[in-house]
Image (cartoon, rainbow, N blue to C red):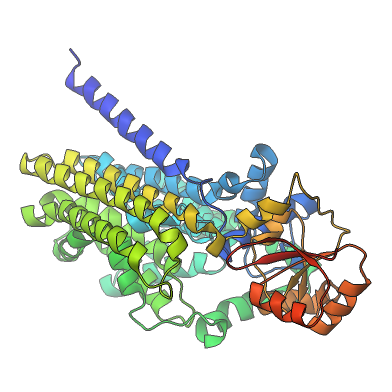
Length: 552
């Protein structure tokens, strides 16, 4: 018979295996969504192809909006594992999974008597955190390194830490900030600095500022972060103004980037993103803030401030996207894990109840979706996606019911495990099912219809993107396209390399007629307009949103 410790070890190993397989299993089942996933995958692909590791390029055009750490990591994955959707999404998935391990480790070190497994399972089953690790954006990489910085600082503030250990944790924190800056810019400094300053102001305690180990910390930060910025400015004279002024200060302060949102924008994002744990979080936050802490650094209060600073900072910005609030989730999840055992029975049952309610809601949506008016949905795909929603709903409901049963048996850890793993599996099912909607969000299918066995598109062969630009096209094509009457976020790069751009449709038509062989991609309505005007060509492939046309 197994001993208790051996049995639990096998149970933990099984939970870890299920979590890891579910976390990484769906990365290749969906085409790259446009614009973000197509953009970041293509930049990494072009970095590998060009062997230029300093100046990022999107569709062959300078793209200096973001730092290169994720591009480097993804390009390295492409070099080792090949160029496909799985490797394109590997960096956010990998950093997200490492973040789970980091939260579990830090949770245990900050409270050695607390079990670490619930922290990991809460993070893995958190809808918003999981989705952040499944989409190719920069937010999960930023979140991971901010978490390294914040938790490195917290671990240095534990009672009884030796001076050498404190220095080591703080150097790790500075290195985390440097990597956060290389992931998404100066927000990698701003968030930790604001959190610490707010804590110092509220506690009226300057001692944390005196124990940041400034000299070795700044040296580590500079060694990691500065070289790329210096090289980028040397090779691109416009870099400093564009990157720091336009992409940081103007993006934050001015409504010019067309990503507006009310001050409460992130409230519904957090309410949904923190499921299934959302109902338990207010009680945990309140307890963390009110509970008297022993003398010394107040860890719980700092975690609350960390989460609050992220939410307030991005709520004040004129540019908002759901992923911006992702760096708040590790702090919230750590607080929940630390205080969950002390919550009321009702609060501890709430995640299981939320699972059941969410499962029923998905089941209802699966029943209604195929019958919605065509103007409100893509009815030709709804019936297929409804099956995936129904499956996800069943898994959620089953996990919630099982979690409730375990909760009644006074087994919090087992209930958390079932609810967390069930939630993780259910959201993966719902996400994987979105492949039936690929042609609305991605060019994968239409490009696969013409690229490869049927046709080759070498770089010297003209290929135009007319009056629109699906940013996943260059990735699947394996080369840039020539943009026609489309600039948008590529306008700054086009200004420095105008020969890579066709400014008008009339100029495109002239070039098209001169080519013996050429190809173009455009929307069906736009092609119909050009066809009626006598544009020669034949349709190679089409889907709901795109058409690929050959000159002959």
